[in-house]
Image (cartoon, rainbow, N blue to C red; front, top):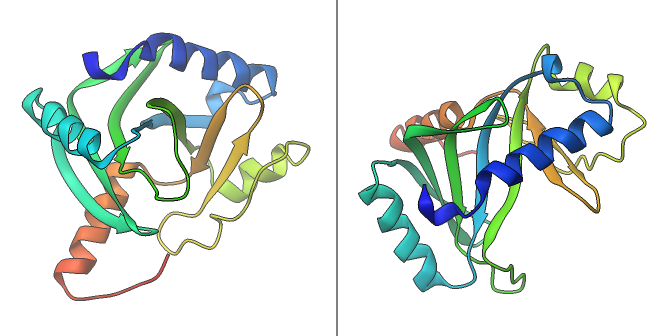
Length: 174
């Protein structure tokens, strides 16, 4: 994934910082995806095509908070820092929230349930605004050094569930 920049350093930095925060690797099943932000809709379309041209499968593209978010399953998962990352998230830019292009956050699947994980780390400044999600509740943790989210289901499973619901005409609000 040449288009992602120095993902090895990004992943290793997250791994180190999680350890510094007291989060152990055995509490995490996997780093299921990385989020790569872009500044323009043109760049979103360009990277979406480039990822597919390089063997990534577009498994979902959904409208979330007024913009498209593409979910890719990587033919060759990203490997760095002892992690294997099988998915990539590419959000189109939000109108009122510009981001510089690059890797923005990683998401990790917890072992033994999100609630138990959060209880074990109650001293950390988790943001809980994603806890009301129906399919895959999440908690985020932002420090001056990293941005990560924790949840119970891998992104690929969630994308496939949402696609099935959509195909059956079942609407739900996250």
